[in-house]
Image (cartoon, rainbow, N blue to C red; front, side, top):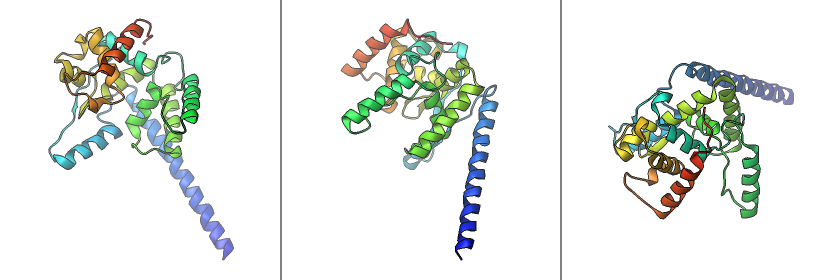
Length: 232
């Protein structure tokens, strides 16, 4: 009896391992494809659309893909300055930021700081749910490594800028620029770009024209750092 249970457990573990390996190849195949082709949507976009359609079955997301060269250099610099100032130097993980975030969370006794780089955010948005847990963080790390291995920094930033959320149902730089300022992504000014970058952590909190003291101060800070931001 015990022998049968042990064999069944071994088979179950083997099956789980095979499934996990297949899943990693599925992630990798998509990333290889996206090196030269644009993703039509992401896991995060699908999740947001599902939520939107609970209230409005006809709801649609506003997302318009534009190539890297048609996105304002100001927005590229602003996003890197705000979200990942070591983007050009690391291989997916900012270990100094991770250490600082860990120490702060320990001091506070709860998670109050994060250290996700742009590739980590891209990994999460492309493939993963909003559920938090050690398994998801581990999978995020694996996908981040795949992204950094297969894609160039330019392609990582291009995809990120085209799938990031910038409002309720608004995704990507082009839709964001038109939604908040009525201009194309290519025409964003430094101040507009800096403000969009500041919105990224809480994009649905900012409707067009909304202003707060925090937004003003943080935008000014990002404007001051943009000139030093290195981009591909």
